[in-house]
Image (cartoon, rainbow, N blue to C red; front, side):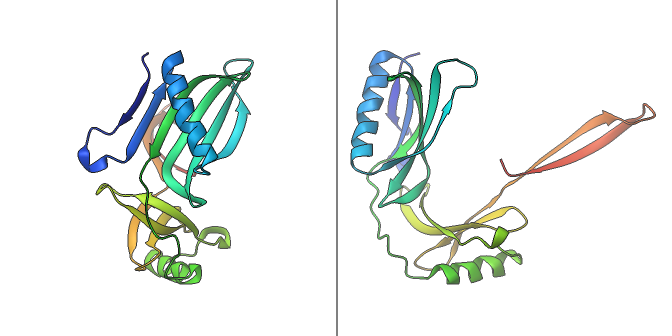
Length: 193
């Protein structure tokens, strides 16, 4: 496959860069962008692990940050063989510009989230500041927290408005066979990733 470093087709999403590099030239181009962002402190290494399918290779995940705040949906995965990058895949955002000093405190975000959810934040965790891209080609500084019923809330760190809600539960329905050989309907819920 030919490598891709391309901006989104939708002009309203012009700040999104999709990386899909598998050829030597496209990997080099992606590496140049990644190196610039690492030097600027816009990428942070999150994890390096051995590739479970190909011996001698490693997979590294880099998280995009803006002023040390994670950018939701901004990450890159590199596959390496020794010091050589073999492939690069991910999504990054450019031209991020926003105030990173929240107008509301984290404790206020907790109250807003728990009231809206009618549930406690899972494990008593504090909400985390994240930069969230919007379909309108803008970015918002938000507090992100997941409540006990596995729903994640994003609260605008300036207005206190809830700007996004994500159900983290995974559902599936299917058929199975009971102990007496009769058909049974099954429903499952996976919580987490």
